[in-house]
Amino acid sequence: MAEPINGEARITVVTVTLNVEDVVRATIESVKGQTYQNVTHLIIDGASEDRTVEIAREYDLEGIISEPDNGVYDAMEKGRKLAKGNYVIFLNAGDVFYDKYVCEKIVEFFSKYDVDIAYGDLLPVYFRPTDVHDHPSFVAGVAIDGSVVSNKRHIFDNSIHHQLTIYKKWILEECSYISSDRAISGEYFLLMSAVFAKGAKLGYMPHIITRFALGGISTRNFGKQAVEYNQGRAKLRTMFCPVREDISIEREDEFHVVENWRDVKAQYLQAEVKARGVVHPWLKRRIDRLKPFIKAFILKLLGGFWRRMFYWTVYSEVLRLDSRITETGRNISQVERDLVEEVRDLQRRLRDLEDKNYTK
Image (tube, rainbow, N blue to C red):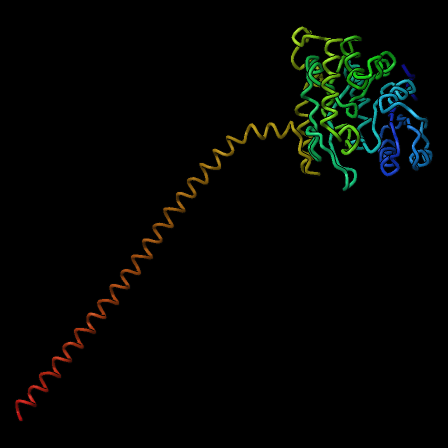
């Protein structure tokens, strides 16, 4: 394990790049802006032909390597071998830490809890207005809830995104991204090796770790990638744990090492919803559970309201009609009186005429 700097643990951030001159600066600035000072940054570049490396060299980084490679996991493999920090996280080009306190929280978490791999939540975002993606698991502005992975059987089900995962150095010294079978190479292979072959202990951090840039290779062409992923996952299960129910767990929430993690999550979610409108699945699920009760209450409230409004409307209409009928009745009565008076007048005139004729 790497020696602490000035008595404090070191964090190494590894960023894999290839022709990303428009986003690499944001990633570097995000690492540089952390309140925790003992953070070093490695750039593993795949021989970019744009200004990616030139931009990276403007900064005082731990290391910059630029050479052809065999893909993203080959580059990550180089990064894991070169990383010297006590704790290591892979932050892709365009990805940024959620806020300036993330590394500080990472070190605090590892100092409090006996875990080898920490993981948190992930916030997908669009870096550029023109970015697109077709991965159904990601919605820009809606956080990925890491707490759903709560025990080793959930590792059997799916991997954990590397952008929200922090490894102790020994994990990367003893586990690899590359397998002899290229179909299973990648972060899932490393995670399965660490958990099921090396006995690594995981712990969930109730914080958003990274703003994950949508539109990269991992979120495009989902159909093709899903087929390859499912094939690789089937092979990994056969290799490490063929039967899910045979996986031994201490308890259903064994990865939830923070005793009051729900309260911690709720506090920062409330702050983020108020400040930025971030919608988190953990909060959304709880709101969804309350929806039937809220709906029933609102319907009851509005039902009574609308009933009263209906009755009042009908009553008002009846009064209005009654008033019109009464007024019409008055008008009819007046017409009748006028007609009677006219008839009497005509009768008087006829009598007068008869009298005159009689006199003649």
